[in-house]
Image (tube, rainbow, N blue to C red):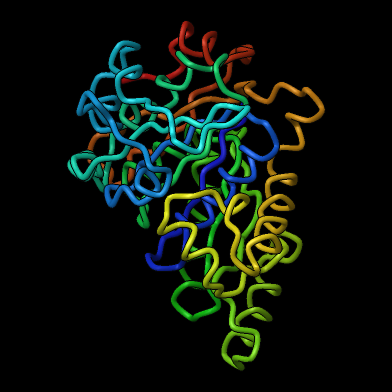
Length: 305
């Protein structure tokens, strides 16, 4: 199982649109996929047409990560076809958990959840909030890779650089398997001089981690999202080109699945909260032999509370 976070530290850049595009590509590829909606705005849940009959959401799951509660919070999307597309439904209640200074135990809650359903999915996509608080850190700790979404504007570029540094810190101190896959440029206007300048700036900052293709502003993607339909099934002009772009992006993110490679190894481990420090993601506990799966990691209790 691969776990991929789609993140941005600035709102309004189309982060959820990219997450839904990747979900559509995964469905088209035949991957059993779970989308985890950690954004309290719940746009990914709406975009996948998911409705929970039990009123249980990711907020309750993170508070009590037990299998019966997880089962109630996961619902099938109407997108389902030959492969499975499920949603761990979002809720505005998750905002109550978005602490700016979470404990180490808190940021490992989603990892604990995914351990229990590891064998059911090929791919997990996490739509994170546009912030660097507890929910985003929780997502990154549970992830193999992160895709950052930006648009070619000053504040979005600054936010992408901040996110890169935060990912590097969490990878160094908590979960060395975490990697920044790269940066996706969304809402590009090719005729804009400002956008052209910011693209050049992004190339200088991220080099090969600036992912292709760039996604232009298109009505088709907005229409398919508004209709809660996958972009691969949307009949409007331009939709097929957008869908191919997401296929290309997904191929780079999940190449290990195609080759049957297991990437859930835990190398290095996690920090412990330190009294009096603003950021509890601080100290690295010396390694033992690295466990080979989420379940083994859970058994070994690789963090101190």
